[in-house]
Length: 613
Image (cartoon, rainbow, N blue to C red):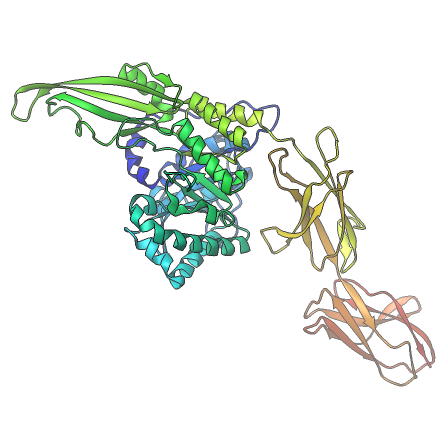
């Protein structure tokens, strides 16, 4: 992918088809689509609407809020009709192609270069508004063998891990996608035996650090084959060794033909690398690459071209690239009728350009340029989505999102609907919770019921109980539960502070992921009393009150019930570092007194009696 950054200017000059919202389906499709969004093409998938009023400055690690209320009707209409929002039901994540590694401590921000007046936080926020996880891609921006050298040293490797994790946390990304193509296309294959173990160590260390922060690790690499076969592919990326450490593998199943005319990514070639990938890792981690572009090669030039002809008309010159959504118009301009190659599952055609004019010396001259074009179209996408269904892989990743024609996106949608998982109905109820509140330390019960839409219970389903405290922006796993034969889970729980809880289930090939309604629970304070049962009259006695949760600096009074009214006794007390109040009192008359502790502006303890002898 990194090599195609150089094509950005030519790509941007080509025709871009208008994005048409796709017709809503009767059921939710499987989320099988992902892809890259380069810094120079953000506006092809999202409108650069007016700046968010809340976007500056963004607190590190906290999301910017960009709901509809912050925009006018015109901006919201543009947002909802954009590519990402029109296709959000097909997607759960995107990979913004925004960063480049320069050293163990320096990651270049390419987003700013492409969008100097539009803050990154705003773009990320709109992606989140579409319900998408944001996993930005980082390329290798170092020179030959430099990154391999960094990874060979434990200190620089750890430094690099910290730099990446800090970037993810600071911007509240959902993870990182590594596109380190220098190993494959710059360093040379003689270096792979040394680089591979360094890469494995790096991936394992980065995985631990990211997962400790509930972040994802994705890698994008060229193809690999079974190492037992003669052709191994780019084995430096060591899929089998990193399989347990990564969450996503994006295979760049395109660029099969670059120097010479040929298919972008033959179907059988694509299938073969998928077969190897799923033999070493769960199929759900694997994503197949789809090219949203085609190539146009010069195969030969006859005669001498005039100076008025376009530059670079040489046989074997670097192929021109064009967007898939321009292919139909391009073929018409070229005067050609594309044919579909059944073997490769791609469209192709050849055409001729003739140029007449003057040479540099002023003489009349002419040339004929023969060209060949290959690209994938809607039918190509349909065939490749068949591989997604056949092997039950995670889905497809497009380079780049928004380049494909609408008909190709429709084929993805049709496939996603055909393999749509059964929706899971996730219902959570709370018992022994009074109007959303409980007393500190009191047990309450969380109950979940999980059924299909026809109310058939789902047995043996793993359910995760998650909690989010009031000062947190991310959810924390509390426990994994398993549904019984009637599709239920039941578990007791206590809370020491205000929090929200929910039940979630992960998506599988057969069933969709599910999230219950979020329940917010207010935890009321409790006061535990340590006091004497009886004391002698005229003798000072102490009463201690433990405030739970332990709050420092709260003020409370010891109170006595006199003729039905509560009156303060002695001086107020302030809770110490352990949330403890201490009171001293003296009673001169024999009898039984009724007392309590009243926390200012808060709760009162239960009443208690003391016998005065």
